Structure formats: C-alpha cells, structure tokens
Amino acid sequence: MAVSNTRDIKRKIRSVNSTMQITKAMELVSTAKLKRARNRMDITKPYFETVTEAVKDILGADKSIKLKYVADKEIQNTLYIVITSDRGLCGGYNINAIKKALEDIADPKKAKFITIGKRATDAYNRMNLDVVDTFLYISEQPEYVHAVHIAKKALAMFDAGEVDAVKLVYTNFASTISQVPVTLQLLPIEKGEQVAKDEATDFVNYEPSPEEVLKFVIPKYVESTIFGGLIESAASEQAARRVAMESASDNAEEIIEELTLTYNQARQAAITQEITEIVGGAEALK
Amino acid sequence: MGRKFNLEVVTPDEKFFEGETDMAILRTTEGDIGILFDHEPLVAPLKIGSIRIRQDESAFRWATCSSGFLTVSDEKVTVITDAAEWVDEIDLDRAERAKERAEKRIREGANKEVDVLRAKASLERATNRIRLYSQK
Image 1: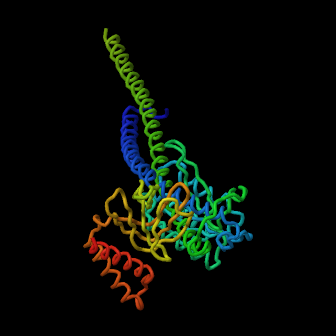
Image 2: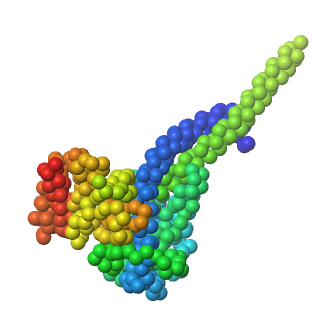
C-alpha cells in the first residue's frame, strides 16, 4: 500500500469504518423492508394468480372470441412498462431491468415507455427515448390504485391505436439472493397452450356474453398483472439492496483488516527505528 | 340446508373470504344472482353492490363489494373484486366523507379537469356502503 504514514492510514481506517457503519445500517433497513415486502407479496399473490388463471381459462375455453385484445396482427409499436426503483445502491437491480427492456426492442424509435421509478426515467431520458409517462416514488410501497393508473394509461394508448403491444418489464423475485428481470407481454394476450388441449373442455356460461366479460376482465388482468409486477419488483429491490450492502460491508471489513495490518507494520517499523536510533546514540556516547 | 360448496373472495390486499357456504348472492351487471351447490360454470362481471354469504343455519353475512368478477367452476366459486368489507366493519364517517367529496367533484366536474367517471364510481361505492350500513 502506498500510504505509509501512520496518521494517513489511521484516517483511512476511520473513513472506511464510517462507510461500513452506513452500509451495515442500510443492510439492516433493507432486511426489515424485505420482510415486509415479502409478506405483502404472499398476501397479493392469490389475487394475481386467480385473475391470470381466470383470463387464461376464458381464452382457452372459447376459441371463437374475436377481440382486439387478442388479435394476432403484426406488432409495430410497443409500449414498455419498466419497473425500477427511485434510489440506487442496490447492485445491478435497476440496470438489469433497464437493459432487459432495451434488449427486447428492435427499433428504439418506435418504442414508447412508461417508467416507474427515477432510475429508469433518467436512463431512458438520457438515451432520448420516448418516455410518455412516469410514476415516481411508488416503487417501494406500491398500492393497487397505482397499478390502476398505470393500466388506464396503457389501455388508453392501446385503445387509441398509438401502440399495438404492451409489455411489462419487472424483476422476478426468485429468491433472496437471486432476482431476474422478466419481460412479459400484457397485450395483446397470447392465447397460450390451452388451445392445444382437446375439445372436451366444459361448457362455460358467460353473462351477458364472452366478449362483454372479456372487455371487463382484460383491463382487470392488466391491472392485476402490473400490480403483481410492482409488488414483486419492490421485494426484489430490497433483496438486491440487502445483498449489495452485505457485500459492501464485507468488503469494508476486509479493507479495514488489511489497513490495520499495514498500520501495525508501519507503527512497528517506526518503533524499531526509534530504538535503533536510541541505541545508536547511546553507543556513540560511550 | 343445502349442500355446501367452496367459496373464495380475493381482493388485491387480502384473501377476504375462503370457506364453505351453502348459498351466496352476488350482484352482477345483469342483476343479482344466487349461487347454490353445483351451479353451472359461469363467468360474470360484478357491479358495486353486496355479497351475501350464508354459513351454517344462521342468517346471511353481508359484505360490500366493489367491482370485479365472478367465476364458477366445478371445484369452487371465485370472486375477484377490488375491495370487500364486512358490513359490521364499515366506517360510516369515512363513507360519508367520501360521498361528500365525490359529490363536490361531480358538481365542479365541468369546469375543472376532474375525472367525473372516477368520482361517480367513488360516489357509488360510498352510497353503497352507507346503504348497507343502514340496513344492518
């Protein structure tokens, strides 16, 4: 290490130490927040799953349904809803989601964005991409109304024909140490594998008609999927931050250890030198 | 006492109800429907209204229900709604306040840029709560 002056080393140790205190505190905070976010995820998951299942069932059971939401025409303009956090210091969480969306885009000029969280907003604005709407300060504690607003905006654009596909990019909470960004197509809805199933599916009654029901159910589906994505991303964010802060703390500890060693060596060298000088001086006086 | 079936009421914030019942009455966009054991498979949107669930021999348990939809399958009945609330848990003051607020919004709707549709929906929800509360 270049610093050999004991005072400099000491100062450096102190600075690393105070940084470590911050990262440790942040780690604890995100651990607590992660717990809350996971609880929330467990509560909302049934809703999210039931809605998705219901939509899949309806679309799978009835092949005659013709609706613009399930059309399979060619996709020209895509609207991306990208969920990131407002704050950094969470490892690759934000950048992974931002990149994931970009990977999917064939022609950046035709893509439109609704961004959630400051990180994505700033990133796409810097790239001069078309950000049509942004939602800030909701990513940490998303509420259902937020999802409703986002869905409304997306559906309005879809209905007006400004875009012909809507995709959601969120971070899937695989485990506390692994979060994977995912792109999910919201609209038009892919009919899925259910179509391949044999014809023996039950006859289901739709009141008043399958089209009417779908007209109602699909916006719900979009809302709930966005909500599910928000909730899951919130948990992922905390998990990512916890891991990032944990490794930062570990790293700080390592640096401190190394610096302490260097400090002790330098101190020892100084003492040895002093003793040599004293002995030398005494010797000369004889 | 009829045979029982499984009923599940889910909202974004919680699993509101999960259990057995022998009869449930819900308000769909086409009108009230009662569901008994072995109802034919059905999917229908729900209006802002009430959910009535009968458990044991006792009377119906009432709950408010915001918009959503209902699916009946062979195994169970699932109600998906934005919000549900047992009648005895209704906060009347809050409902009254919401009603006033919504009415004001609708009155001012034309000149200010307010979402009248949203205000109307919120008014409907508030009146629904008040109505169910006073029936209790």
